[in-house]
Length: 203
Image 1: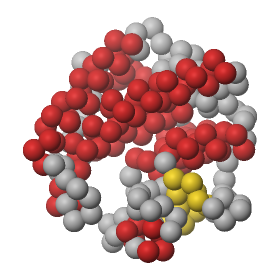
Image 2: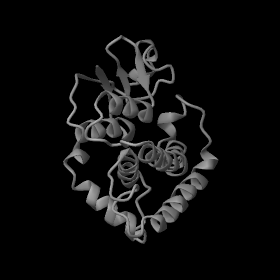
Image 3: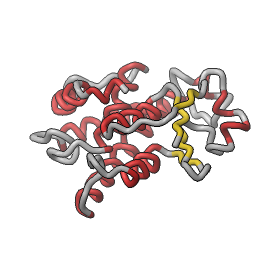
């Protein structure tokens, strides 16, 4: 296998997931700033032109971080980061979906339509007027999640999972691009500090 890597939160998710599993593979950096991900060579790997992409041993490609991480989990089940039973896997997928749709997606689009508008307006359809509302939605859902995190170590209770990796990488990104975590979200702030102490966070 080979990972096509780059800057940004989504590649960070895959690297962190791999680090938690002590997995290694060849990596090739794709230059997002230069638009390398929009060139024909990369579009053969991922027609959306997004990052990251995973080249499988049979020569095919996977994209979308949840699909990549689920594939890696199946290839190397231990240590489990999704689950070892149907119930554990379902719980992880539930929280991963909630985090992705309600927090990561609006946070990302708020940034792309706002601070990063000049970079993205020639690459994807943009809606600058939507940026403030999208940021508000992400912040509101983080406030909701803060209540859900009371008394919990991780999103799935005592288990550290893909859902935590996803949320950590996107909150970390938001902190750098004008959408910092509200310190009033004390449960998430404590969780974020705990996850940040894991060696994999630096992957």
